[in-house]
Amino acid sequence: DISLKLFPNPCIENTTLSYMLKTNSKVSVTLISADGKQTQLIKDEDKDSGMNELSINTSQLKKGLYVCRLETNSGANKNLQTLKLIVQ
Image (cartoon, rainbow, N blue to C red):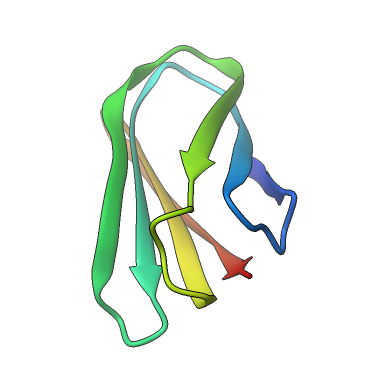
């Protein structure tokens, strides 16, 4: 399991995704609109275990509901977590 949160949420121009990894992992973060379309691939990179933060620029997004999807892959262990994000 991954501990994650978005703040501020709702947001206007920026939000920060904070997440804790138990092991070094390949991390992919995407934003998905309410109609199911991927709007942004934010990061797709290797990250170290421990607390990580990612600043997300939402100023180009339309107001509305999005899903922030965080996917990790550390060899045999794959994990998917989602959070609701509201852009105002």
